[in-house]
Image 1: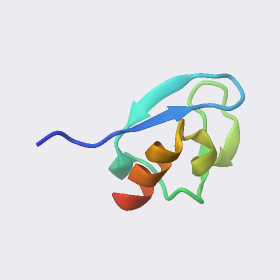
Image 2 (image 1 turned 30 degrees about the horizontal axis):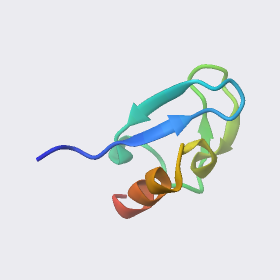
Image 3 (image 1 turned 90 degrees about the vertical axis):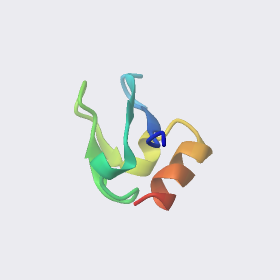
Amino acid sequence: MDEAFVRLLCPECAKDWESTPGDLPTPDATFHCPNCHASRRLAEFTRTDRDLQTLKGLQ
């Protein structure tokens, strides 16, 4: 079985990457970009609504 992943995109520096939902905090938690250290709600880093729904559904 393939493991689910969430695609993330920093709204400030445009760094994009993937992570598994289990490695991420809840969508409303403050998250810090590993590249520029911008701080926002994790939900603001998800690339698409589908990525956000995956994150919410698998936590």
